[in-house]
Length: 345
Image 1 (tube, helix red, strand yellow):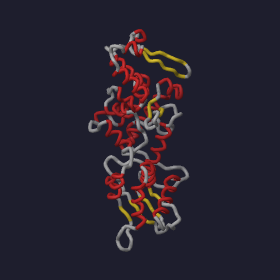
Image 2 (image 1 turned 90 degrees about the horizontal axis):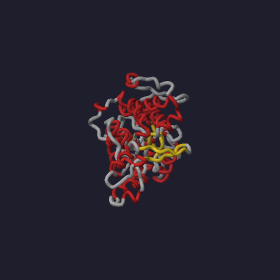
Image 3 (image 1 turned 180 degrees about the vertical axis):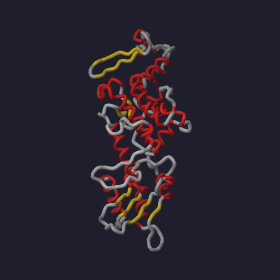
Image 4 (image 1 turned 30 degrees about the vertical axis):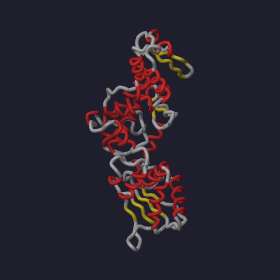
């Protein structure tokens, strides 16, 4: 933030060249991807005072303004603006990052006026989503007596309980069968937008300063999420697509080395989380690209290292999407070595 916080859109568009202190390497793209991954993890991690993770842990939610401003004071909006520009930079450069925002925030990147919906809550708070769904589907004749709700929200922060009216005088207006849809709509707008409006506006200001909304009409929210974060899992079809798009080293007979064939057999057998770890180890990204493996900047390559011994661990050259296997004696031995390598990074 000290080095890049003051960068304007023009400077961001010039790109970055990354060098890690104490490490050798020329940034051909892999170092930038690694830097982006680390920066994203740091900014989005719980405890940073900017986001929280959902109960299932698979998405990040912008904190309420009072929480983020308590953590960062007057610099809060500047930090969110920086993060918005960083996310736009990642999208522009084709860098996939671990930033699974809420569906509503992805829609706001495309349309700053998009409203939150009750269905958006399913990905954020499943219990609240279910409770509001119960109100919407209950008998409207007895809804008021059953739920005893009014047009307000009760919150608690640092031990202090507060009541927010959804409309003027809301705490005195009961929720009935006739107005329950209006109540749910207002409730969702406050939970997903009103309570963190300043943070979201700052984030969108930064994002749209690099990529204006009128430059993104070709995306749907789901497609935007896929382009930015990749597909969620590595399926068996993905493994086969990767194999067909890959290059490999050949033996004296002009056929793939047996260790290469073992590698693909291992990939088909691995659970999806370990497949993602292998993909991360070799390419720097744990998710398949939306445009397919055939469009990787450098083809995924599997070869047997003549400099390696059977007991050595596999090596990866992330800049070139290259995996170098040891001449293992058995498929099980190769599997064990591969998993040690990907887990230890």
